[in-house]
Length: 181
Image (cartoon, rainbow, N blue to C red; front, side, top):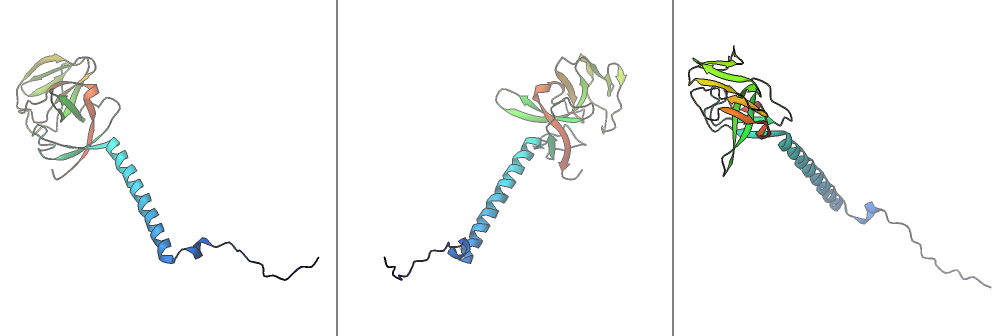
């Protein structure tokens, strides 16, 4: 048997870098980079929205601490706000869910009373250095119901959203704000 010297076709693997021009490779890298950055930003914004929520103060009830129009940032707490903290909560009036911001002054089972502009919790006068003026309407002795906190505005002449708030409607606690004081 005789073998002929025929040319043998040679197949060598083609390198991926050789198959695409350099500008196409750059475009692919740029698309991947943009996709990764976009996904990272969306994850970050989603996480922040879940943990930190911006709320606009609509009334002057928290003045002088937070005047009307100020944007505050509420961190979502999965517990009871502490006495003196400013809590954000929803007020359901049948058609809308308005978000209010007020100061927590008492907890379930405690008695609250305002006499001559002084806040009394369980019969003890409370020091409230955040008040600009302690004038305002008096409040007869009230016991905070179970599962609630008692809130008051810093502007005691403004009597909006005063009283017991169900803990289930508390969104969180105000941590910081945008704007000047």
